[in-house]
Image (cartoon, rainbow, N blue to C red):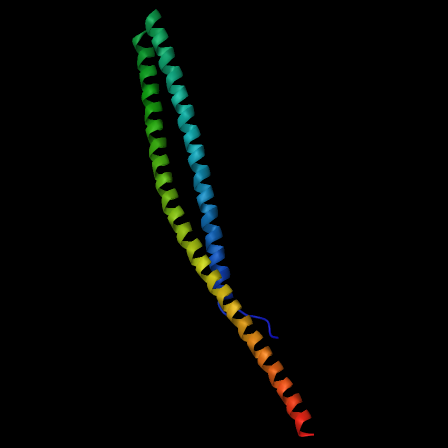
Length: 149
């Protein structure tokens, strides 16, 4: 009996490769989001610490120059937080797009795998029928040979 050969095997392997690559991209984006969220948390802690320090200094008296330095520093931190939040939103948007792409690529791969399995099953059923037909013909020929003698 000949072995089954799926003619679209190379396309299936290519689709598997695409799905794996997309899955890696999704993981990379998730990692980037975690790093971004960590930076945001550190910036917010720095902001809170600096604001608290400013409040303490204002309570005990602070000169105008130091006050301006604190406010500029706090404004810079706010700007960095906003920038990181914007980057996080972009990463979340990219993640959503890549997850949709991954779902589609996985569906494409599964479709081909199902086709391969169906064709393999059909092939082996056909081979079994052919083998059975040959066996039946051999039995008939033996019986016919024995009757005619």
